[in-house]
Amino acid sequence: MSNYDSCVAACQACIVECEKCIASCLEHPEHMAGCIKTCLDCIDFCRLCISLMARNSPFCAALCELCAKACEACANACEKHSAHHACCKACADSCRACAAACHGCC
Image 1 (cartoon, rainbow, N blue to C red):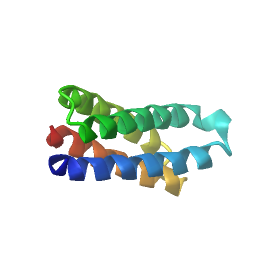
Image 2 (image 1 turned 135 degrees about the vertical axis):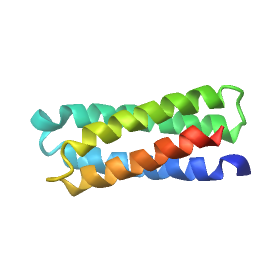
Image 3 (image 1 turned 45 degrees about the vertical axis):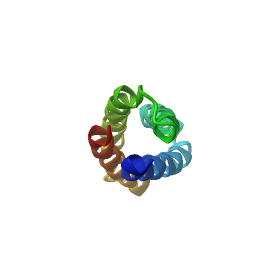
Image 4 (image 1 turned 90 degrees about the horizontal axis):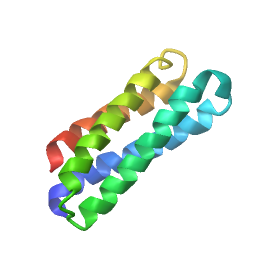
């Protein structure tokens, strides 16, 4: 799995930041529903990517590309709130880093 180590680490960090973002956004769900939904999608893709990388799946490359798209969508959603919510800024930054790692890992 060493070829995937940096991508796995980026996915793990992204999951953590998305979870933190969701927890914060739930305090204002009427304004943050889009952010919450994209974070949930991002978490699911990141978790599946980690699993596929762990077993060196032949589907890894295709899923990593989808994961990168989900991370980019999440970053875009979170950036809309980043000026007022530090968790959204941290999540957007982590999602961008994960997207970059996913583009280059497989």
